Length: 322
Image 1 (cartoon, rainbow, N blue to C red):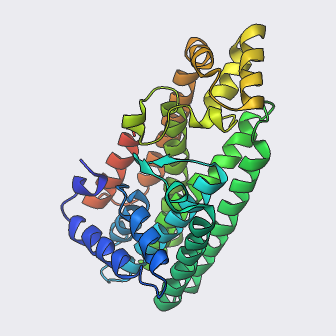
Image 2 (image 1 turned 135 degrees about the vertical axis):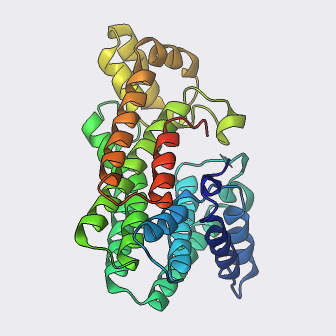
């Protein structure tokens, strides 16, 4: 079941967001439309725009501006995917060839820029300075998170604290912006806005930590990307950081060298170390702790079917396999 199907009240709004997105990919340059449609229609869950809808509804919003706002969040997310795949030289996403593998790096980067620009055009139409402030700040932090990740690439001395800062920027920030902006649009009070902001932050961190785990557990078919991509790119994700901390000298040296050189030559022995040291369980526990924090924030809001759906999404975040 897709996340939006948990609550039948949200499905018509979710469908309206999909229509809005497809209707606003128009461009005078056919390649822009082709790449935009390709990645937008490639099978993602559209969780971030769904969070906008649920947050707005949870705060009693009865207007229609949450539809374009949700599209803004999805356009920004799609732009980051286009840019990430170029930076990471990725060839597979959601089980399909990446845009850069299909059209090349330059078109992918430029279409990502187009989607960023289109999202700001839509925000101007929405006409909310507080929303524009939150999203412009979020895009800055996301870019900083990507640069920080690049600096940490092939660095086996990356600390857990540094890595958590990376995922706060590159993943959690857009979740946070989605839920906070939904609350802003609804005119919610400061307490509800803050609760939803933090719910989004903790959910986003949990979501990324589960992704880290799946890189060492799932098959390519389950994940929709190549297993071991993080190691191949020399990314010291939390399972590797913990494995180095808890492994013996030989295991630590193996993982450190694998991160330094990147590639998949040492994938099998590294996966053995990750499993033997309990790094998978540790990372799952950290994800669950983030979910618990998200749910604690959600408990500050009045109970509705929409907060119930937000609860289910958080609970399922640690259970997913892709």
